[in-house]
Image (tube, rainbow, N blue to C red; front, top):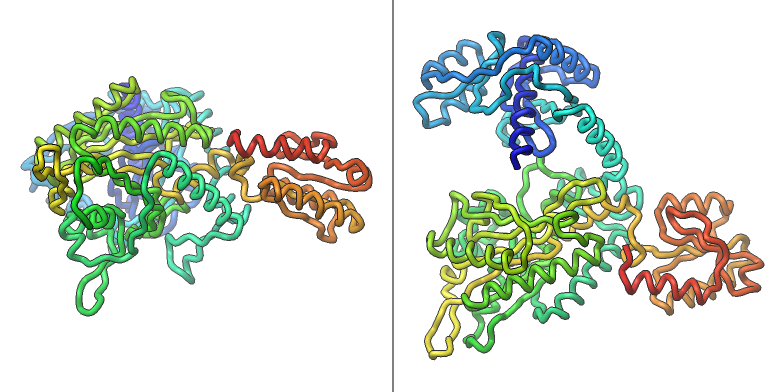
Length: 581
C-alpha cells in the first residue's frame, strides 16, 4: 500500500510537469484537472486544435527539459477570493469554477520551481528530478467535469514508474492488451457488436457465436445456483416510480435511471433487481423456519451512463446480472456470507482463477458519506462481513467509504493473464431496505422480526465478465466455453459423407461442431478456423474415412496427428466436463 501511495505521488507530480510542458509549448492552452489514476495519470486541456501523435513527442521532450532542471515542488496557501481574482485575470475560468465550489477560506497551490503553479492539494515528490521513467500514451476526448452538456476538452494520458524496467514491462503489457482488446476481438470473432448510430450507444447486439458463449455461461450459472439451493425468480423490467422512492434509488441514484410516464404515473426501467425480489418475499407471511430464503435471477437492468464513460462490454447501458438476494436472520449473516464466498471461489476456479492472493483478491468497502440507515446498523453489517473473511482466513484490504449507499460490501477482484484486476463478485449486507419496505418474519418466540438482506452477484455483469474473459484468454476460450468447439474440414467434396458421420457422433456426445465444406482451399479453411480461435480443427480425407479417424489440429499447439474418432470424442468430452482451462 505504501508503494501504491508513493506511485500516486510520482504520477501526480508527473502530471504537473506535463501540464507545465503543454503551456510552455502552447501558452494559450487552458489546463483543468490532472489526477493520478490506477495505471498512470491524465490532464484535461482546453485547446482549439486537436493534439496529434507528434505533439505527444514534443510534450515529452519539453517534460525532459523541465525534469533536467530538477525544480522543487512546493505548497503554499492563498485566500480563496484572491485565488479567484488571480485566475479571472489569467482567463483561467475552469479554475475559477473549481475554487468557487470550494467551501474553504484558503485554497492550496503547488509550484514547480518558480516557473509554474496550479491549484492542487498534493502530495508531490520533493522535486521533478526524481521522475525517472515516464511515457505519454494517448489523447482522448472528455467533457468538463464529466458533463456532456459542458465544453469538450482533450485528455492526455500518461504513466510513470520508479524504474525504466517497470515502465518497459508496463508498455509491453499494453501492447499485449491491445491485441486482446475485447472491442476488437468481439467483432473479429463475430461474438457481438454495437450499432451506436442506429440503435443507440452502450447497447450490445450478440451475434450467434456470442449468444452461444453467453448461453453457455448462463446455463452454467443457473445450474450452479440450483445446486446451491437458490430459488429462481423473474421480475419485470419496469416498475412504478414509487417503488424506487421507497428503496432510496430515486434519491441516491436517479441520475443513472430511465424514467417515463405510464397513464400519467411515473415508471422507471429497473437499474437493479432488489425491489422486485423484495416484493416476492413480501407476498406472504414468513417464519424463521423459512429462512434463509435465497432468490436468484439473471436480471437485465439499464443504467443511464454518460456517453464519455461507455467502454465496450465493460461499461454499457443495458446489461444482465447473475443477481441474488438472501433474506436471513441476523445470526445467519456470517454463515450465509461464508457460503457465498465459497460459492464464488468454486465458480472462479471453473473459469480458470484459482489462487487466493494471486488470482483472487478481497476488498471490504465501508460506509460512504451518502448512506441510508443508522451508524449502528452499519457497524453490525460491516462487522459481520469482516468476521466472515476472518473466519475463512482470507486476506483482505479495507476500502474506506466505498460501500453501497445501503450497506457495506465485500468485492472479489480477479487478476487476468496480464496481471490486470477486474471487479467481479460482490456481497453486500443491508439492514436498510428491509426496514424501508417493512419486511418481517415470525421468530421462534412468535414475534415479528426484521430480516437482513444480503445482495450478491458472483460474476457481476454478464457483459463485463464476457469482456474480461475475452481479454484474459485472448479470445481463445477453453473448450467448455468456446461457441464452436470443433470444426470438421473435409479435404474434398467426396469426404463430406464421412464428415457428416463425424459431426453426428460429436453432436451426440454434446460437442458444438460444424462442417466447413466450402469451395475453398484446405489451407485457407485451416487458416480461417485458426483466426476464429476454434479449439479443434478436424481434417478428414481418404485415410481418416477408411480408419474412422480424424486429423487433429489444436489451437495454439498445431498438428496433433491422426486420432481414432472415439478416442478424440472421449478426450474432448473430458475437457468439457472437467471445464479444463
